[in-house]
Amino acid sequence: MKPLEVDEVIFYLENRWGKRYDFRLFKRQNHVYFQMMWKYLEQESFPLTEEEYKNSLADKIEILNRGGYSDQVRNWFMTVNCRPRLGRAVSLQLMVNEKMKEFLL
Image (cartoon, rainbow, N blue to C red; front, side, top):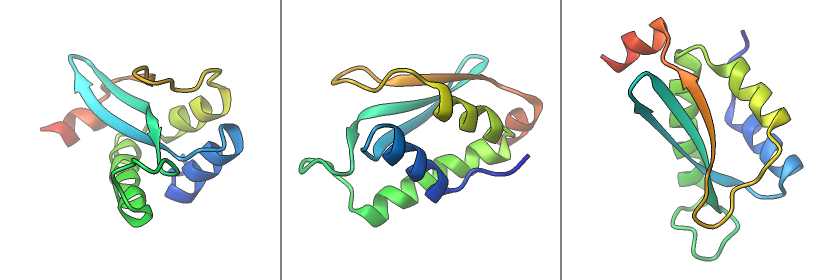
């Protein structure tokens, strides 16, 4: 299983949607959610610089890689059919696995 990298995620975003969307990662009950938000780096009102955006994305990707979700996330980027809209994120729901249980403790 090859780990995800920031440049790879940015490649998917730019080639599929033409925008570098922001992401949110959170756990609820037995699931981890990776959400592509409606805000994106190219917006004037986006609160992060490019460097801050990449660091934030790297932190989330590191958690997903440690949890062993890289292939699922990669597949999702290649197959998801929708894009985020104002107030509506696009979510990838992942089951909390043994690796992630150890990471979350």
